[in-house]
Length: 436
Image 1 (cartoon, one colour):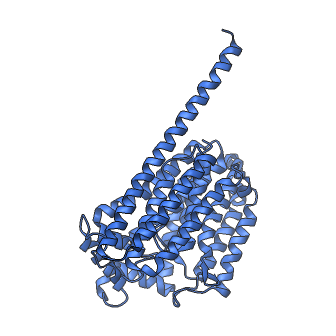
Image 2 (cartoon, one colour):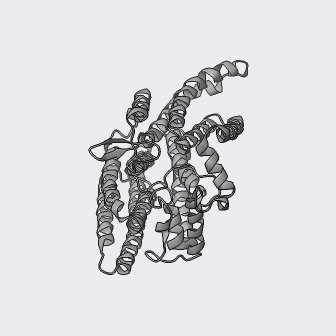
Image 3 (cartoon, helix red, strand yellow):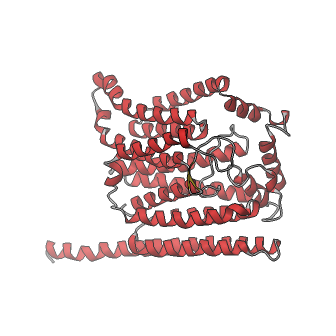
């Protein structure tokens, strides 16, 4: 057998292995979606039985099922070689969140289900765009300009659907969108593209390193400072902190220099101390964090009720529909993790944490797999950092591990902007995973 024959015979073997891996991934995703579906329908049925004649929760479970089956079927055809864990985990958390919203704030559940449909359509649309992702990398300044413009518009035309508090939303025909959620995605794409294009500067000789470092960091710092300045102006401190964490993490991944990590930590500490004495909201949140029992019926009422909810849940929880999480203010949004803790207990809380951990680990693993494609690697790492850091920040705040930050819990908290952008992030991770 000559060399040409050997090469010809090797091709079907490679194709066969790829097909086998693809089929295995499809079966794994189908199994995980089935498990998630059983969980969602059992939870919906339990909530319906608790409410006796109210079976609205089953209707929301049906919407979830249509979205899960539809997206899974479409991606099987258009994106067969994708990561089998990301979509089931995202849908599990989303369905769980909708049922919990139906439990504590029924008026918002229908809107969240509508946003789920829109988010699934957006995820599918992202997978239909050119998989090279050049449209995201080459036009980084355009995307960032659009995001900053929308964010700046909220300063002058922003509103708050609830009536009070920071005006962080743009509204049109009773539809509200939070530009800072979109800016998270655009900023990660900008950082990833810029770091990938200027990677050669990091290998410069030592004698010119300082000059090159300043040239390298100047545009990044300028864009980051513009975003943070607007967010601080709007008093959206949690999102500003999230941007800073993402910026420092990607900078460390690009350089491998721990100086940026320690420097970033020092800047956060210094900014926190300064903000404590200058910004009333920061001082209030820190004081509540240090001693919530000083004013449990006033300024610390929300965090005190959250801690009591976790205490009431114990290990196994009160059971869905059996607790009283509605006593926690804004429980359907920022404090939905407290509702999970009361009605699903410590096991439910650990399941949520584990789900976010697996999403993050799959994203980081993906970044390692595509490290030869620098932009994709930075993008996968950045998206994973945003999802995991945001979830960790809000869950830690609700548990009083750190001061409250005011960000939402991805996939689970009520909020169409957050859900839509989170699903677009998952869609981008799926696109990257399909080409590994």
